[in-house]
Amino acid sequence: MLQSSLEKYLSSDYSSQISEVKVSASSITIKGDYTGSGDFALCEITPYDTLTQTTKFLNTYPLSDPAFSMVIDRFVNRKGFKYDRLLSKWAIDKNRGPDG
Image 1 (cartoon, helix red, strand yellow):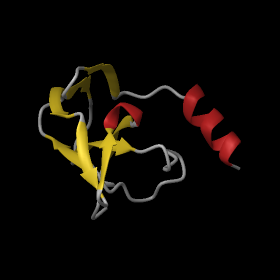
Image 2: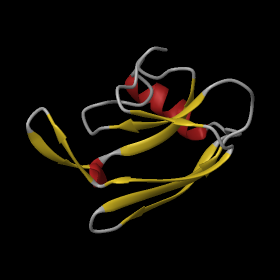
Image 3: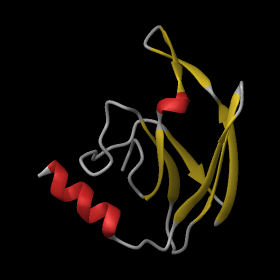
């Protein structure tokens, strides 16, 4: 099931996209654009999450500009550990943040 859902996701075309992720010593810059109406968010997918199986993203950033560029800290403290977001994947999602 996981393999087929990933294959379907990877072979689909989407109107929203992340066009660039740049990592520096202390920050990560994520650029992209989205289309449509409603609430959109940039979602962080950690190595222990699976994009196609996740029903609620815990780390989201609301998007208000359809063409966005966001700079976030590269390192964050999660459950008492220093986590490097270099390991994360990123996706644009509509209405499926922590409350969605």
